Image 1: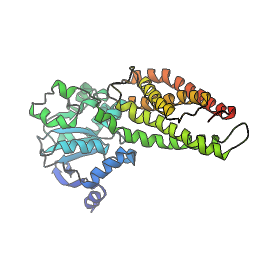
Image 2: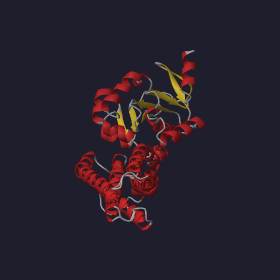
Image 3: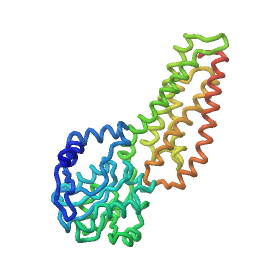
Image 4: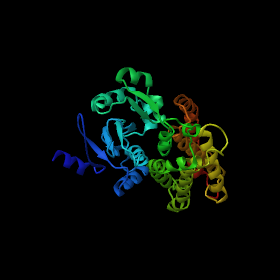
Length: 354
């Protein structure tokens, strides 16, 4: 009854495989509709932080004592990507407790690391299940894993696999040898656009709050509070904030290789400046010179900050580099935003054609 209940609670478990230390949950390489729906929701930040599998050892197909052992994070999208690409093989999947974080991010945080790997090997009694002593670990997990320490403490050797799960079978067919292309870390347009929904959803609450504040303050002026001014300047302000947000979470990442500068913050500012020009020529920036200046400061500042968030998702930024960029960029972004909000507020009292 315990096993039946677990299968019902964890639908990705399809059965059980007998081993020398007891039964191990079995999973399929075929993703169900529920798996795909869960991945879609996670991409849109719906329950993303709770979208995980239980850490431990899983059997794919009908693995034996000589079957290979692949290591994954317990973020379910990572786990699903691995088992899907291993279709047709009999293998073991050792899932580390990364607190529901993917391999790349977890390796930087230390949860996909040496200590957890050794602990999970001991906890699952892996040495009693397989005769060999080899673990195939994602290359993006390398920053958190000291291979020599894993071997000393567990007896298992770490073999770094390819960057992408889709190259695993070719890697196996080549005798566990990775080509330069398999080792190449890319941050392609597709990779960047995959991150847009999460960043967009994460930004929405701030966008709604800021739009509400600007809508409320749009009615103030030297002649008192005007509902007509709210209806005139409020929607324009909300649209400008939306444009700045889209510049930061969509245009900045999508146009990343072609935007000027090296830092993400500078590229985001360039995207924000581009959307300001659209706003200006569309008449959304207003006609009051001070209001125009306000949006010329605010929109690049907002876009710069939002695009800078992608440094944590890119695989070619370093932790020290990100910290350095933030130390330089955040004070400047904050200063531009404060000056911009101040200029916009003052412009409400200066009159003129709005």
